[in-house]
Image (cartoon, rainbow, N blue to C red; front, side, top):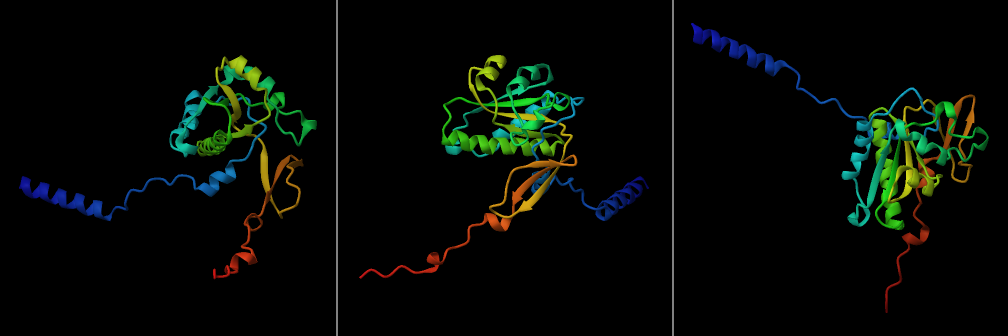
Length: 227
């Protein structure tokens, strides 16, 4: 009887397993969604403290992304709230909004990633920096954070303040953004300057159809045969 009982239980278990829906992993955020979330925030929740493990998670994407000539010369210095005062005086945000004097003290970022290079800056280093910055900001968006690339900063003073032997080439601010940001489709040739109105930060973006270079008529013509 024991064998019959165990046999029935095994059959019941197999029947339940066959009827149960297959386990599916929760899909990660789609790229289009992350790209839309990845807006450049210039104001942050100062009550939110970015953790070291979050910055390291963001930095870790650099072990998975392309690198020109596979040179992998970029290095990254995480900066948390306890060192933010070493960076804040030496950065500038919102060049198109000089009247706001950004970052504002009540919404300044309190975490950064300082991007450095082991070699002098050149076109390949610049390529890597762009790939790296976008990848890190997308990762930040994926884990629920926001950020911005900062090119307007005092390299010498930040290097001195953080004791860096390598020259900084870019600074990323990371945190919980508090701004409402919307993109506005525009045609090629229209102003691309971002602006604010009624508490909303508007970012003009050229329409996809205007970004694509059409094939020229000469490209359709066939070369004359050689005699």
